[in-house]
Amino acid sequence: MSFFGSRHLDRYLPLCKKLIAVVSQSSDAALFPEKDRGYVRNTAQNTAKYLDSRGIAYKLVWKRQEFGQPFSSLEEARGYIKLYTPDVCAEETELFLKQRIVKTESPVFPWYLPRKKTVGIFFINGGLK
Image (cartoon, rainbow, N blue to C red; front, side, top):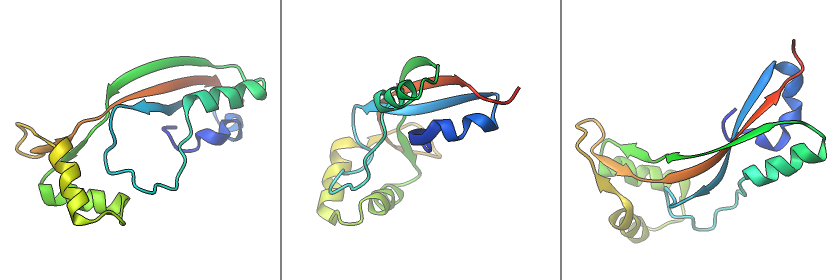
């Protein structure tokens, strides 16, 4: 389970022997302008509180790694930003890309939005034997 469904991990425990959940904690930079974002992310700290409140034992490991987004073209990068922030105007998109996108050596993905991310990895024993 990676990022999705982490708000109710105990629902999945009867269905597995071991559940490994990856929950975001923090990031150095956004992959798109975070203008008027309505979705509130779950965090590893909230997940730990949730599991603790239900008496569910777990092992938590912290990991920090590159978690950026590659693009085959600048047009693809613009489309990506438009998908996640439809209310951002073209000028804001261009400013964001100018400040954040980097050129790579890859012929397949010559553009990249770097992003270091810290995640909590929860190891939880499930109900199946």
